[in-house]
Amino acid sequence: MPTSALHTPVLEWYAVAQRDLPWRRPEASPWSVLVSELMLQQTPVARVLPVHEAWLERWPTPADLAAEPTGEAVRMWGRLGYPRRALRLHAAAVAVVADHGGEVPSSHADLLALPGVGEYTAAAVASFAFGQRHAVLDTNVRRVLARAASGVALPPPSMTRAERALAESLLPDEDAVAATWAVAVMELGALVCTATSPRCAACPLREQCAWVRAGSPAYDGPPRRAQAWAGTDRQCRGRLMAVLREALGAVHVSSLEAAWGPTEQRERCLAGLLADGLAVQVGPETYALP
Image (tube, helix red, strand yellow):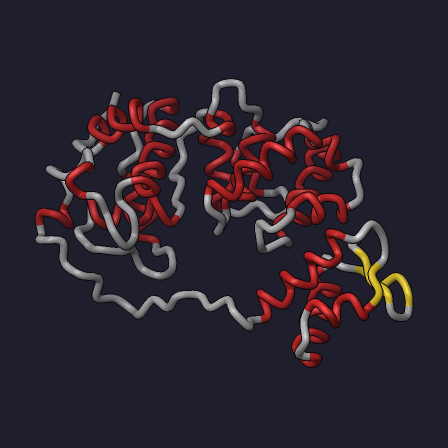
């Protein structure tokens, strides 16, 4: 049973406030959970939902995806951004088929060994898909624990050992309860304990929150800069990828030139896409998805 004063309010709140997301439903497969975790990295739920649905409809198992060229994964990734995640998901599917008989493994160590799966994703899949007891520390969870337990507005820019130790110390003892706690804290951070406009009046931890008790002091750590987009290499790469995705076959370089004007930046970004395996050169002046 819950042992921390934080557990019961959060678990009770989650029982009634949780969103109905396909990867959280009882019938969701571990593959669905793994796909969602890769897609949700740095991407809002609203943008992920239609792509996740289309992905699972086309590739309901890892074997279905592993049998396709990597370029099809990139194409289906659409405009989610950071398309290298599509390559990692394809590589993970290939590894699941080769090393685990086509079934997403349940052990944290085996998950961590999959291509493109880091500590957070391994813990999340082990917890959410298999009901195991792990500290699952994404941005939302780190923010809730920073405020509720540590009394500061925001966590440090990079994960610290102290944060991980705190998260592990707050895990309920029972596996199933710990797994629910992990997703419940994440949901609280996403819906209530948000970064810029936290809804403290609606928070189940208002009475226990160390940050609220301290008077909700402003963040005083290193400056946090908003990530630029317009005119960046990220935007350029996105434009070039859109041309490649929408083409039925090879694309002439003139189409890429039309998509992005500045020559030096376009050539640099195209070279980066080739180096990352997101595009291939198929002729002297033609390019395509891998």
